[in-house]
Amino acid sequence: MNELEFANRHLQEFKVKGNELISKLCPFCMGGQHNDKETFSLNTDKHVYACARGKCGERGTFKELCEKYNETADYYLEWLKEHNISPNTERIYTQPQYKINDLSQTVIKYFEARGISEDTLLKTKVKSIHNKGFDYGVFQFFQNGKLVMNKIRLPRAQKVINGKKELKEWKEKGGKHVLWNMDSVNTDIPVILTEGMVDALSVYEAGCINVVSIPSGTLDMTWIENCYEWIQSVKEWVLYTDNDEAGEKLNKELIQKFKSYKAKIVTHELKDANEELVTFGKEYIVKAIENAKIPNVEGISNLSNVKMVDPSKMERCPTGNSLIDQFAGGYIFPSLNIWTGERGSGKSTVVGQTLLNCMENGYKVFVYTGELASGFFKLWLYLQAVGEKNIITEIDLKTNLTMFKPKPELIAKLDKWIDNKIYIYDDTNTNEQDKLLELMDEAYQRYNCRIFLIDNLMTIKFNSNRDGIWRGQSDFIDLLRLKVLKNNWIINVVVHPNKAGEIGGTGDIRNAAFNEFWVKKLGEDEEQFPGCNSSVSITKNRYYSDSDISRGFYYSKKSKRVYGKKENERIYGWQENNVEEVDLIECPF
Image 1 (tube, rainbow, N blue to C red):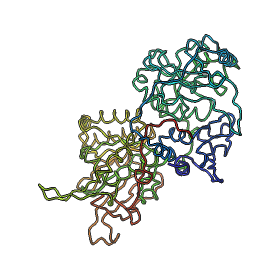
Image 2: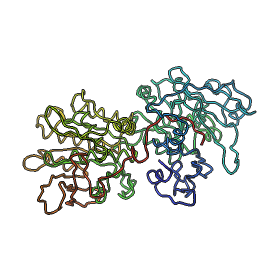
Image 3: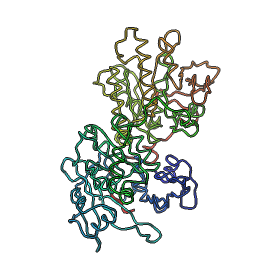
Image 4: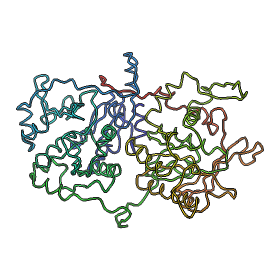
């Protein structure tokens, strides 16, 4: 991915000025309380980014920015190639190598000026490092008693050198992102979580020693996967995040991942805990933590406080299907989408193809396929990904049937391309609804999957219901609807109609759906869509209301693609940029 592709995918609005891509709002601070505009820029020549707001000051390489969004920078892949380094799909963490010293007077005095005593620094294992005649602070990250990362802190105000502000903190390369101070806390009592180590030290200084800090800004959520089992052991969280838009957004996301009844929110006056320690003293921090409250009861809202919806501003993901993207806005979060049509009409094929587009747009996907084994689902998806030019034809000697396969030399590249992006329900699992719902939650909490496919409804074993299978289906769909709304998900469900052309035995399934898409197989004498052998119709459209709209498409038996005339030769990321998931290391840019 290059800077322009990143801006198109991840920045809301931006303009191009020479070698600079200037975003309307900084994705880190969102303009702060004054809604400052055009402070964030990407330099396409130097491959760096920066926010000019003094209270934000986020900056770094484009490679580092891509890491925060689970993307890979093109120039970094080129650098690997030039240096004959083979990127690996599995991340390998390296033991910290810096020579660490005991606390220096420079570091001690710096933290004392911020209200943090030498005793607190010693108890939390803060150290020093000496480099080029100057001492820096070092935060050490431990997991299960092992040092897994060092983060360096500049112990003075940042200077502007050659027009650039110095980095305030940076990590030793190869380290593992975990929560700072996690080995020293008791998970049976409330664990306080802050956005930065200085804030965590401030909370510790106030006497609230059961405190941890996220390792690297609000956009980096890799610590959740790296600490997942430990996180599950925490009985209660107290979230003491920064008093700004980024902190509020982090609160909302962590409440969803930690479960609302396990998390309390600290309401405070200044930007962060350290400002409050210096300005108000220790008692303020203690009282703020004591007064932390569980979020308001879900399901009950004061209408005057509800933000009115503008569908054009809602988070969305293009599906790659021209009809759905044009008239339904693509996949809009949150949505429960029903895909239906007669057996053999190609509904599973059409919805499956949209998952490639979701993956290309940076979303992780979870798939349950009850009719098709995991290996066959992968074969069909890979055929769609490579297209007809990259497919070989073979004859099964036992049956004399024609088979289609991706070129063997492409399989490894495709595996790397989708690695950690699409997860599938294991064939060996039970098909009971509670197990499926449980693993959907796990896929979201651990891997951040937010787009789901359930194919299909009839293959699920519903909980016992005295009113029969139709009521069981309706109840299950209603559970999916609630998950969509609570977690801001997209769930696609494939449903076979009955002999009367109805979805299920009751109208509840259709009523719960946000969108309903019908896929139909067309005959050779089709008059409405000449030359087409398939059609897709929108029969329900909650956000935009346009329904009973149909469009003809072409289905390729060879590639499993459903496409318009100009869409068949679509190039996906594995081919366009030779994208591969890599074990990122430090590069000199």
